[in-house]
Length: 240
Image 1 (tube, helix red, strand yellow):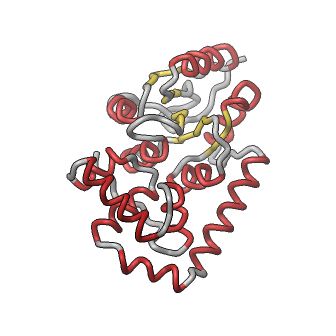
Image 2: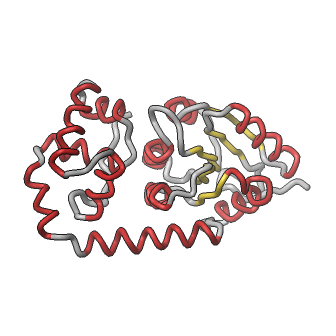
């Protein structure tokens, strides 16, 4: 059955889909599924965030299907840059991870939907239609995770622990900048590019942050920063 919708680029025009996934088999499978179950047109496929950004500068599309776990520029960072360049594009994340923090960051960055790759066969077409209709698409199980995480993040930010919040004073300005970028899901290489420093220097700053905040890894540092109000919720503009 061929589905046609008003995409904003013409009257009842064919919906144009762009796929971003570092797994070629996944992209091929999604493309075949769309060709079989809908009249949507796959106008492009990219294997990473950087490639997607470059190709989408010259490719008009209505919906971007975005993988979240990619090398270098990950899904969250790619979403942020795509939205900054084209606020009209709809982004639907496709991932194998139901991590509530990842769901929260993806939606906060501008994604309009989030579904697991295991749900694609049964829910992808419906998810695309919901997103194109101006709605947010989250399967019930993921919606619960998202709102639970949202409640935790907002509650923690509104009531930071004063003693732990004071650890911010031990961070240098550069360490605060690095930490801010880490909370946006940027890779070490991406942080280096943004701040125009070497990746080795970034890792040195990160190690210092770990010691000063008394945490053991990046995830703990990011959660600590959000929980205790060490960073605000406004994303830093990313270098293209």
